[in-house]
Length: 62
Image 1 (cartoon, rainbow, N blue to C red):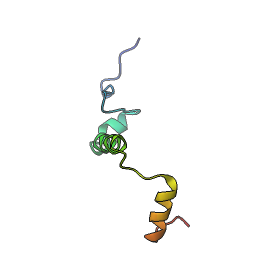
Image 2 (cartoon, rainbow, N blue to C red):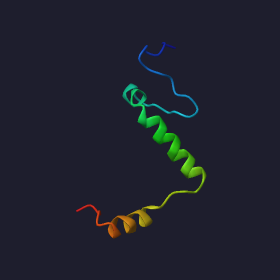
Image 3 (cartoon, rainbow, N blue to C red):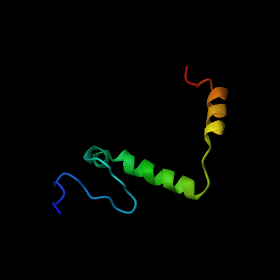
C-alpha cells in the first residue's frame, strides 16, 4: 500500500477528512465534532422542522 502524501493527515476517530483541503480548514473538524455531539444528544431537527423554522424566519429558498 502506498504511503499517504505528506500534506494529508490520516483521519482519526473524531475527524473524517475526505480531501486534504477539508483537513486544512481548522473549522471543519470542530464543526464535525459539534454535529456528532448534537446527534448523540438528540439535538437536531428533521427536514420538516427545518423548513418550518426557515419559513418563520423568512429564509425559505426561492
